[in-house]
Image (cartoon, rainbow, N blue to C red):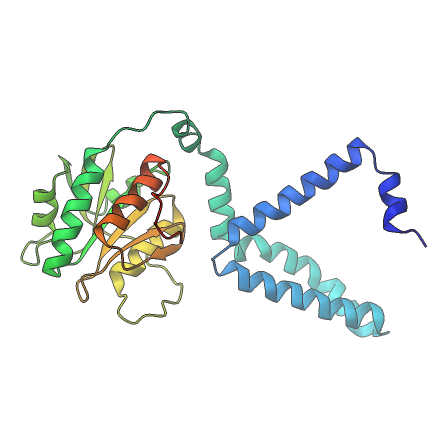
Length: 265
């Protein structure tokens, strides 16, 4: 019987490169689906495959083997449908050149980020709910079209006015592109992920939803608790104080490292 040592002794440069490429692909898939519902789906697929292999190959069950041979092609075709959000995100990441180019650009203080930080702090104190979405490489024009076009420069005063409970535009999200508020009262896609905390309502689902279908960063201020959260890549980072909010926005939007003492989520 061939041992691992025998196999490694016959391994050449091409074989090593082949193994590295397969490892990189598998690792990239796990990174892509980490923290998403696809993890549970993948576990189910693996468990089902093990059961089918056990029943079809180890135990002689001709009728069951025939059934599996007929169903298997259909199951393979269903994979792109089941993993559609993850596949879409992977293709978007392959098409993003701006995120790579940002690594080579010298970061400068973005006035829009500072305005959002200041406004979020005041909105939190006043218990005014808010949903502020930063557009990055994935275009959000289809969601901008659902709101009221403003195309205005970002300022704390304007943000606090928009999200005042007595204004017409406080419901929905604002979308910021290149330092300008493109539109307010925009309709965001709601996430279908389960939120464990019942205090997280539609704003949190909307912020999480837009982060699942794009690379946008969403800042959420809870109307009920006043807590500030950030949604990114299908995850929510909650209970942010001003200094923590400052560090995370700088990291995500300006590629600056989180200062020492910050908690990585």
